[in-house]
Length: 65
Image 1 (cartoon, rainbow, N blue to C red):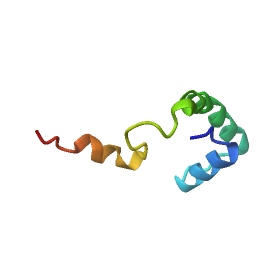
Image 2: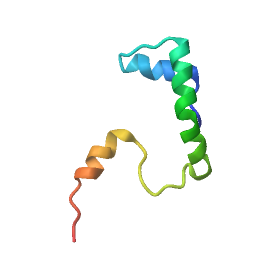
Image 3: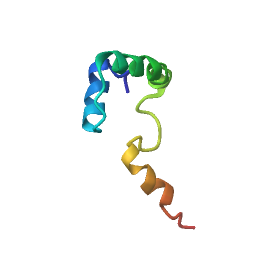
């Protein structure tokens, strides 16, 4: 998990159908970068799936007792 670059932000925004210019992509990168830096020390060690597409599945999964 590394800090996203301006180029990566632009690519993700494009795929999402919300294209942004370089200035906005840089601002987004600078604003969320510290969060990525903060988690860098434990990246890959968390005991759960970080894929956002699966959040709904995990949240609605029934717990068997």
